[in-house]
Image 1: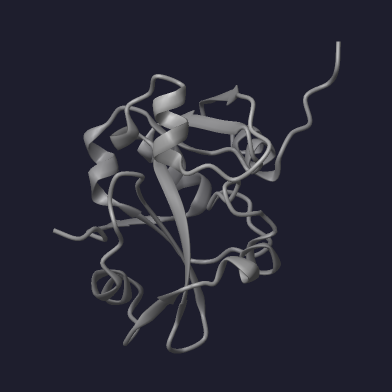
Image 2: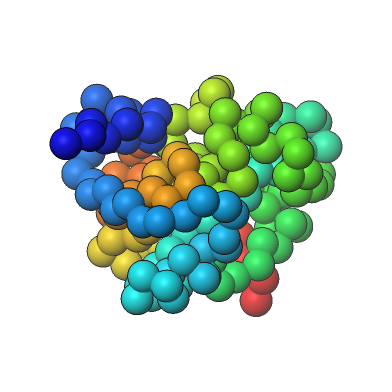
Length: 159
């Protein structure tokens, strides 16, 4: 039996003793969160994606929103206390976070960047986020996510 290789996200959740479950699925290349949810018979609205942004100040931020939604960059900037934010180009994601596109999670990044979880997450007892690599998901409560990331909730999605 092969040993499961834990990601930083899994290690942090275990260290902080935050309840969660991990799900593994076949995935060898980037597939968006909506397609993954549909493939696995999950509610895409309960699946949250992590978008990395850079503020006008040069600081980095993680914005975590429903996979079915788009980020309102003005709301995101306001939440972060920035004049503006821009999405990080895909080629920069790994260097900044330590994770690759499709496996990026706000839990256990290279550095502790400010994390903002869209307030819609509070409508669910359990949300689904990337587990830190392709083919890995973490199921946890919004509260556990916020505790793991020292995150805050905010209205981040387009109306």
